[in-house]
Image (tube, rainbow, N blue to C red; front, side, top):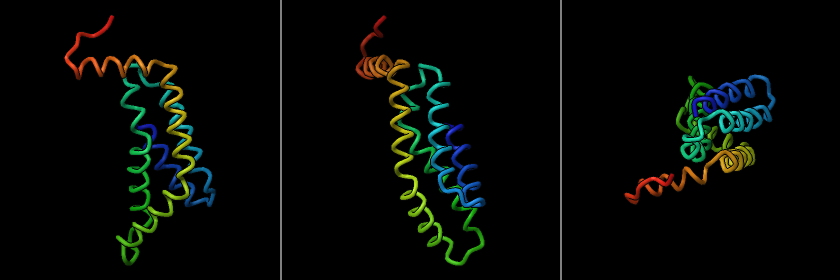
Length: 126
């Protein structure tokens, strides 16, 4: 999650400075793929739900930095977040879908079974 947040934050600030809007989405998708490939198989379940939350956190931080000092900070932050989330929506869907696809092949179904067993008080399957 930290990789996704750091990449998203730095890409958002870089995209704003350079004007390359695609950089924000491309960095998010790349960070999602890297995170899905490098995380331990036992942590896949947590990773599958976190990319949108990680991006949202990074986007709020980036918008706070970009709107500091402007009049009507809350209004500017709300407008900036709305615009940013609308622009990034297809990239968010793509990055999250890639995380899910990679996680399924890396062992997500067994993590879901183990989690279900733990919640229902059953002994883990071997």
